Image (cartoon, rainbow, N blue to C red; front, side, top):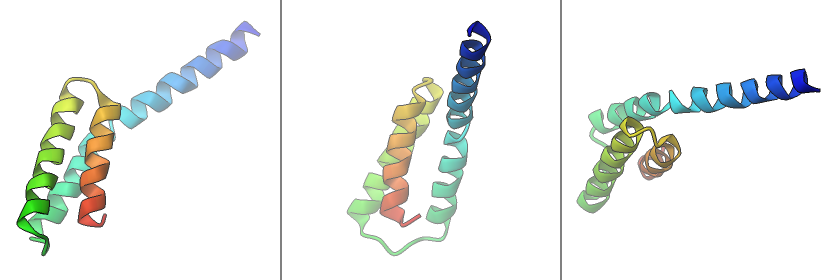
Length: 80
């Protein structure tokens, strides 16, 4: 039973670590879309840039859930 719990804990930790490392990929996707100069309003562009910056700051602070939330919202606004 202890072995099963240890294995389950290891998988939970590994999946969390994998998601934590996805933040940079999300930022790259946003940056790539912004480089295409999408036709969106100036207000939306400003909001996307704020969300992108918030996502990066949260990632650097180790708050990967917050990072993914902000980056996900930016991606949604960009249609990706």
